[in-house]
Image 1: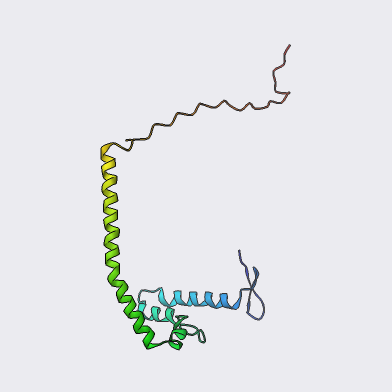
Image 2: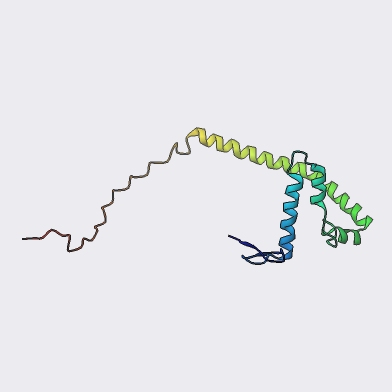
Amino acid sequence: MVLSIVDESNSTVIAGGQMGRGRQKAKQQKIARKLKYLTTDTDYDELAKELSEQEPGMGSPDPFADIDDQYADKDVDSAADDHASGAAEAAPATQEDDLDEYAKWAAEAAAKATSGEFPASAPAAPKPAPRKPIPMPMPSALKPKKS
């Protein structure tokens, strides 16, 4: 539980501990967005635009965009495209092989299931024996006296 105390200068002091500036700013933004957008006339395009914005100095949302631009080479890109198109032609053939292998396996499994090779059901587990009750110690004052 966090208690807020307001002193003479009208500044709020949090008794549970100070919040870091980053967390405080994030919390303020969250509250401001709730107040701004959780109404019946919410502008979702504006919300998406605001959420996609970066802080100043953070750079591009894609961390590798700068590196890609720096090392971009037209010849390498065209060679990579040629290689990718060759791989795309080979992919359907391997996919068909995988499907053929799966179909073969599925047919064998179905044949085994219908031929009775697999047991119909597992044998029932034996019922555990009932356990004896744990003896409870009785204080000597409560024991019946032998006369």
